Image 1 (tube, each protein chain N blue to C red):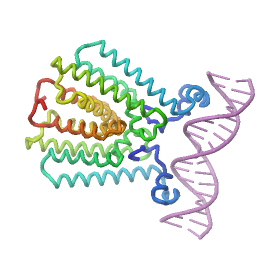
Image 2: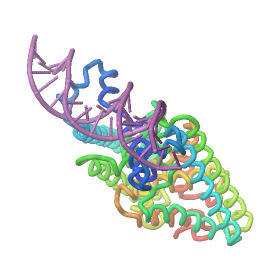
Image 3: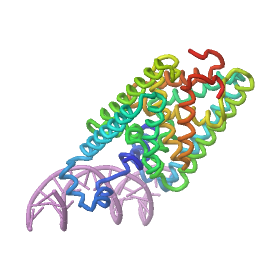
Image 4: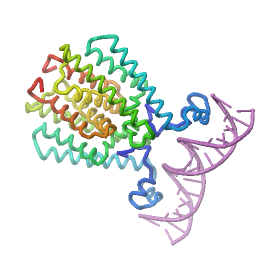
Length: 177
Length: 177
DNA sequence: GTCTATAGGTGGATAGAC
DNA sequence: GTCTATCCACCTATAGAC
């Protein structure tokens, strides 16, 4: 799902991967919608945990952002894009409650980013112009798009360059970097 | 393709749309790969023409960027994402020469953006920190990601807000907006 | 060029034995 | 729980009549 998208992966793919017949997978996930929903829910959960770890590891807002970006980079290096970024592309074809899960992921992460930006702004380590919410939306969108484009290019370093630029954009000093 | 992605549209969809049987479409586009390749080629061409129009319409680099963003917004309002953004998500499943077309679209647009940024920087109407190429990559990636996320949210105005933020980022004056 | 008909494959999903 | 077997829908693609 993270590499090929919702419509290009199948029960047969999983079957080949885990060494169990298709029918047996249906025992756990009756429909593909169920499977998708559970997968996104799990993804959200593990992602949230990693974010929480970042929160507990440091108080430096800039460092939090760097490590947050690293979460996506870790995926990229395993040839995986953000699951919800992929599903956002397939959005109009998603069944049942999957779209809601995807929306929640975005809302959730925008909220976290906005929080970090606000804290960093108060602490004077981040320059946050205008609404932190919009700035957070820009960050998330840019990271999602950067993953897409970088993979097409076959050049992960482009993702890193863009991420660096985003961080530079939030720098307190240095009008010209 | 722009709304559902490469793997979720079919000859049957086109058939229903244009009132011609599936087999007849194969007469023009023998394989789906051919169809995809031609579609992206046409998309690139019309997109390039619109960009050229912008170039001829104004010399104001900031205005150029605004109108460039409008190109994507026009699609969004017709429930269409950027064709190449969509195909970038399906990238690992694309046949034949389609991936190359997608890559070219990105390279092409990054080059145009970099040119506009460089010109605007020289003219003193745009603040371009660091390499114009990277700044251009950030712009393109952010726009692509913003379309994805905004559609998931069902809120086009989020795309507009992010686009505004990107333009504000390139503003010459106003350290704090 | 467009049609009908169909091949050949794969998709998600179910029935029922073990 | 896992299997085999199977169903039905849909996919891309081709053959051949008109």
